[in-house]
Length: 353
Image 1 (tube, rainbow, N blue to C red):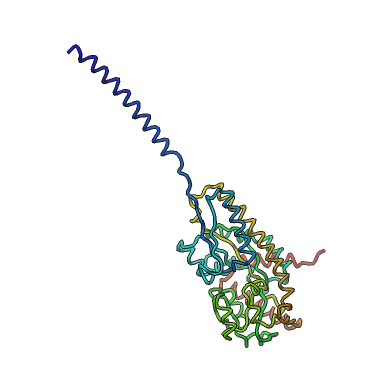
Image 2 (image 1 turned 30 degrees about the vertical axis):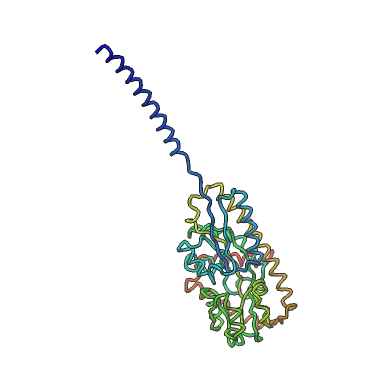
């Protein structure tokens, strides 16, 4: 019994030491759990039908290398060009919807169901020249980017492709001539199809990848595209005429589904927005330079320029105005967005006092 008390005291001290050690381990574990986990590297898969050799894709690839360096490999893009992940933009958008892709470099028309007002610049013959385009875009681009943001997309800007000109194997000057042609319309591009239909032309829908074959086989004999698209795709080898009539302004955008950005550190997101935004702006400038240069040399690569008379041009414009009104009536473009465009154009065209 005399030894019981000292042994009890010793046991109590050991218990206290054991509890202290356990508490320390528990605190250490709690601290480890509370620390943020290292963010895993993220690769964003994006696709485009544009050729990998295009300045558009080359510029974005260079920007991607910068992004990888700035984020120390935590964030990067994998860009699939040449239609490898979708023969047209509708396929790319569908794959974004199911998570197979995270984003894409696409024309505005593909967003017709998600955000139809993005097509506002596509209205047939809306602009008289590229100076009007620049003035309107300065005012309206922010509205369109905000609309894409609300639709769930991180957008890095709008990049010009250029004015689309009718280019054909057979000569055509009038609307009646155009109705006798077999005119291509991009598959899934409702805006392009509606524009052609407004002129009384029945479009033939094909993917971009099928156009060269269609021209060779005679399935189609006419395209309406910006000059910068013709040379990389080698379509100029099968075409003979270019009508000097810019019928539609074509442009694209680079978007990423916001859901794909969950878990990315804010500093990396800011780097992405800055670097990719600058790349899209550079592509926009480069495409303008390319558009004007290629337009000037089309005759040098074998195409004959067809110049319209003022009356012929006026007839085409009348049909274009009717088409624009139909777009609004049928809800292809919202009334408010159309009115905004018309207000800006009226202000630009107003005579200087």
